[in-house]
Image (cartoon, rainbow, N blue to C red; front, side, top):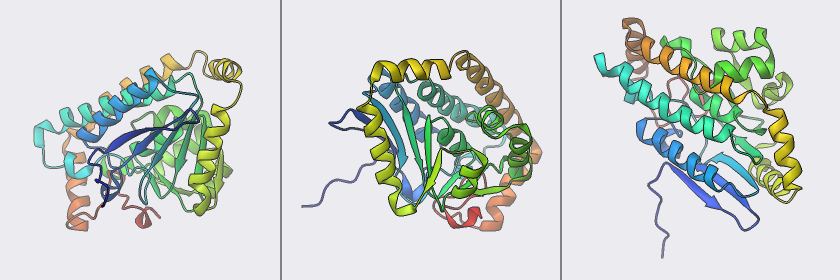
Length: 278
């Protein structure tokens, strides 16, 4: 007897060792963020925040972590494009803030493509592990948009303003090893070890001295939560305003036209999961 296939794009799995797993589970679409998925992510993040266990593990099913917003859902809406993009960004940003504010350690595991909004979702973790073959790509400017999901806030703090500008403005792609070298992630690991490493790291944190870990995390995040909240609001306004413009709509239409019928996993950063992120 076969097990039923989940139709939810985001799931929560609670493990006996007090690790709470938040799992992106729409692999056929590269875990892209349309409004349904963004709202599911927001709701799941809030549910996890209400009872986070001893540590939280954020990972994805399939070949890509998250290719960003679903460009197919953005394009062709005309005057309604900005409102739709604003709604997607608002839901995704609520999820980012809820995850950032978690009192317990958050581990993220990135394989394949992390593009567009998937970058901010990856970087929200306290410990970020990346498969060596992972590909990190912003690529908003390629379709006439600006970063969202906190990317413009996280990147300068992690890699410095010069490298953040290069990543955002030039569409540079980083491998998992590059991301470790730049300080974007905690460490890169062999592809076949990513899930085990992430699970073991989260379990060790969940079994650790909880009071001390919570206090240490609070010190590391002191005074930063409001700054992220304000930046997320600014990012949402910017990306929605640009999405209504003729340049962005022309670039999105051109992106889709060049590729014909988009393959599963196409995202707004021009990233097919995972091979065409290079």
